[in-house]
Image (tube, rainbow, N blue to C red; front, top):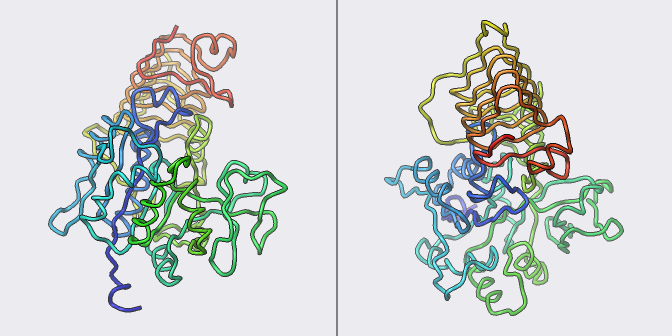
Length: 414
């Protein structure tokens, strides 16, 4: 590889405009990428950490819906050293092409072509903002350059049974993509050549050669009747031109990741969001937050360490398979298979099982909560029960398809 390909110029675009309707009520007043995850993180910290760890630190985040908490998080957390030209900056819908919001992810980039013109990169990473995973983007880019592709799509192997939930890549010769189908029926599924029980699903991460991306965006903008979407429109356009390749995520080696499990989860629904949290609390978690060589960065908060103490009336606290963030206090309560965010309080005799509790949730004495997601500042009064009476819960709270009880930010428990 020559000098140019050894140190290519890269601009990263993170698409953070998602409304997140299927994550209601967690997205009632925040953008989907700003939804808290894993105790102290927000969803957007995961793609940003992957890019920053890989050394790609010129990043623009395209925002849209209810982006205030996301903008605040980015401005407080993601301050990179500007001395070396690094930056993370959020860019709202600026309506440069007329008075309308982004019509899709491709339109979001088309409306912000000035960013590409200003930076003049050789390559553009386009990453989604709401997936939980680690990827080293360097070998992803290396393959893109070596193959001469116009676009390379990161793909994860999924079982044939799961494939109807994803955009599925049909592998062609070498790393070429011969077809791309959104949510195909089982009988139409093209499986992996080396495993008929697996298909290759798009992870929503792309690398474009910059000049070609600009051409594509102009071409797509002029087409009536498209969704102006990267996965739905741009990738099929590139497949038709024979210029789209795939990158097999299972070949990606992340420094410090001893068990190369190649975890990736789209947390687009309450149930997948909840399941991803349960993946964190296993004895041998499917996704391990504890990798010092590839950390997930987030906002540093001033809060004391978590504290587990006894209660005079209710005796010992008991905690098993749970994540406790800074500022958590458990005093004579029981916590099982749960993720507790900063400032959570669990009082004497209370029981929390299989729950995700966001910041400053309070569980009153002898209250019991199970199979639930409680957004910030919810106060469960002493003796209350959530997750035990499906009919009672459904009359008062949001219930997911999988039966998870969800309380909105500050919602009163009745």
